[in-house]
Length: 112
Length: 117
Image (cartoon, rainbow over all chains, first blue to last red; front, top):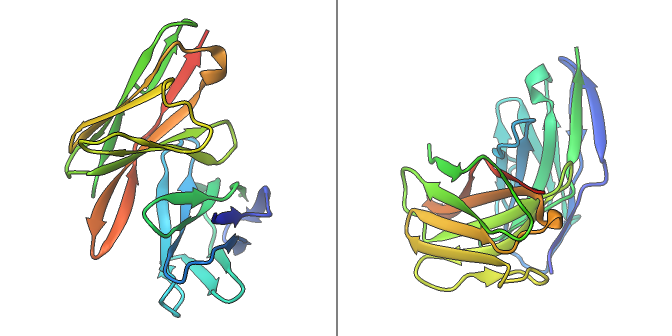
């Protein structure tokens, strides 16, 4: 079975600074997708970024970028120029046959 | 973008009663919907996969007789918590899957907070 591990229960960052959230996963599949989701206090799940495993190029969405290391099974999220609105719980997730497996989550606090 | 709604957003029920939660895809058809359960500051745990017109597939450890899932149309799936007990109090989230550019993306509803007294 696939597992997703987020080893940082909580992280904090100063506004305008950069923070990196870590995620590792375990799978025997060769074709899969990886995601980062944001869950703000409203608890609505919001897709931040998606990475296809067959793509070597790291995905980027504005201030959000990933460092995808397929051999190491590592998938970290970098948030640049952090904003107060980035404060939320972030989940790393894995999908190979449509079902999502989530990590434990990382609570991100942004200090003004 | 694709929108998924859930109703109700909050519900309080008495122990022993049943409660139904609806999940609707508002602007697309979803042959597959998923139901998750989330405890405070914890991760989402997949409960079951709901396929339109067929029986739901439950994850290991989820009581199918307690959590009844019906996916009667391409835009509606329901989760009924039968004979609810306080330990069933939780946040329930649904998602609907839609094909997008050769990939199936999941769109999440806003969740339903269930409190059993």
